[in-house]
Length: 268
Image 1 (cartoon, rainbow, N blue to C red):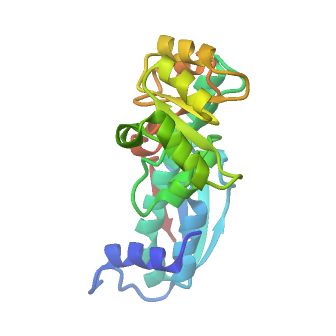
Image 2: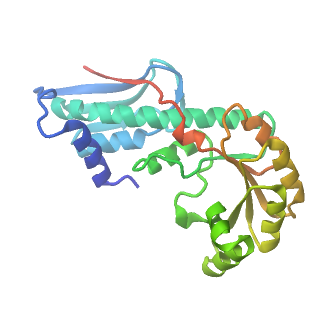
Image 3: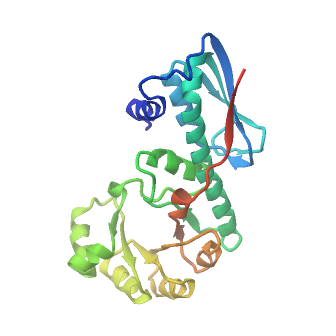
């Protein structure tokens, strides 16, 4: 959930200690308008910003809606000083989130060209302080959030294998996790994927492998083990990975490289 403390930090960062710029009397209305085609996201966060400032705010589209240049996504009404103080933070959050949602929608469409079932997922490569906004934007674009935090799933990564060995790492974490928590193992070769499945992995992640190696790795897994591909996957290479037979393609790109969508806030 978006906390009051988060909104306060956002506003304090932008307003500073002596805001003369927005010392405007009276009341006003405002509109947040798309300047280019996008998938709308981050609107709840924008509403929270204006709510904190005592400004009435209303979404005029739903999160996940496709919007065109000129479409209004948010309308506000209130004290002019407060409206102006909130407009840049709101526009920035919506622009960033909508960029993530738009990139995700495009990635899912590209994957669907080659597979009807593969999921396109995000990773934990999120902006500190904005994970909730970014993960919700991925969902708005039709993607999967993957694990929201380290607590969402046990993942045996390369450093765990270095420290403990693959089989020992799986054994150790399997003993400590809840029955309701899945265990995923990141592997670097098709053979390691086979070993991970034999050791008890619920999910095998083929990391930084070319599509042909991922395809071989998937063929070695027993029925019921989920296969995932990740590591440096871009919108251009996504279809090749989606076509390997994996169940999931995860992309840090969705959150760390998505361009912001352009929105403009207009009063009056």
